[in-house]
Amino acid sequence: MVQQTIDFFIHYQLLGIALANWALAILAATISFLCARTVIGFFLTKLQAKPSQPNAPISHITIEVLSGTSNTLLLLASILIGIGVLDLPERWLARVGSLWFVVAALQVGLWANRAIALALSRYFRRHGSSETFQGSALATLSVWGAKVLLWVIVVMSMLSNVGVNITAFVASLGVGGIAIALAVQNILADVFASLSIAVDKPFEIGDFIVVGSLSGTVEHVGLKTTRIRSLGGEQIVMANAEMIGSTIQNYKRLQERRIVFEIALTYACSPQQAREVPKLIENIVGDQNKARFDRSHLRTFGNSALEFETVYIVLDPSYNVYMDVQQEINLGILEAFTKLGVSFAHPSRTIHVASVPNDSALATLTNHAI
Figure (cartoon, rainbow, N blue to C red):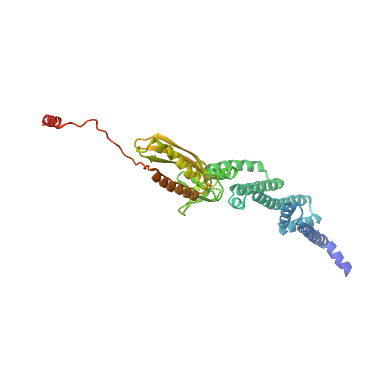
């Protein structure tokens, strides 16, 4: 009975191949798949058991990459190993060799794809705050560009290996790329502007900026637009290219505020009082804890007033702090000038008449007019 079974497997053929050869191929494919899974599981177990090593980031990436191994591709590779055991014609063996390259390239591409994403994400998190990373156009473009380049190389390699002439294909891609670039040049301008924002960093998420007549806090920097929350509460969406082409004032990076203000006193102010004014203002500014006095001078003789100019520095960048300091200075000036006995000037014009005609002259003028 046993001999009959052995003879059956040896002599009976399926598709021109003996059943014994088919059984050996299935056994080889099964053993290959189990061995591959066992080896991968062994390395994962070893790496997961050493999370506190100095190369923990590399270990973490390696674990994530190996965890992404495709069981489907492993099964296909195992089947190809089994097919290699079969007594196939030479032309079929060449095709199996091409399939080997395709399966291996796809699996390596999947590993590299995950490794690139994890490595770049970790890099940008380490070199920027979490808020910045979430809206970083540089991070998005870098990951996207690296993945596209990787899969272009993988696909081209597979096509070349299976006998496809990729020279004409590459040329077609070049011409098509130029046509697409011309069609979406406005979009590409915004994309490259977002890259410029990410690299040059004129502002980041959370900064209060002024662009032309618009102002607000940056909420999101995207590939095409930047979103700003204005003081009024509405969201402003601006194209990145338009922002880069404008002058941007970033108040978040303001360390101190230089304030220049003017006051005007009437010409009834005496020279002695005019000398006292800058000293009074210096004392008033000096009494403020968050201000540093710079200078105060009688700048010029105006058309209707003596004009004084004062400069001081607010040590806090907050606008509310500046307004509080300016209010205290204004109130102090009012009190001090009241005690000094000087008055603020208001726009006025005085007409001086050199002479007034007498009654006889007026009568003569009236007669001539009649």
